[in-house]
Length: 111
Image (cartoon, rainbow, N blue to C red; front, side, top):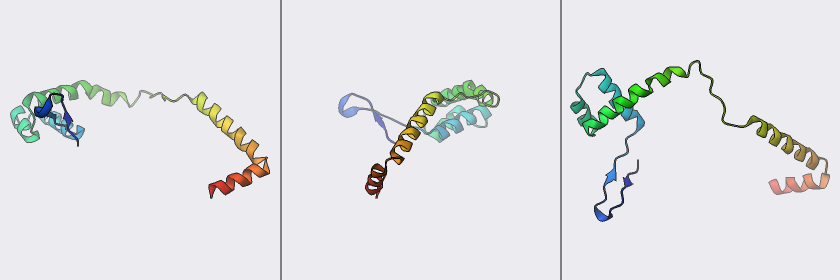
């Protein structure tokens, strides 16, 4: 967990990096309202405004949790390009396999 330094010379502040798990716990704690925002801020050692921000992020993103059940996620990979590459590699392999000298040399280099 590294710290990010801001420009400004010797007295540069370091930004505290907080893991997503702790952020979600802080936001859930704020939603439950078992403890006050100030108490949660003391537990997680952050400013109370940060707890409020986590709570807001959690509420905004809550609907996306349930969207994934029925929504199809489209692959960002171009399948046609992959199939073309597979075909090209298979042709190269078949060509090299038909040439006895090349195959022997490839086996030597592999070992």
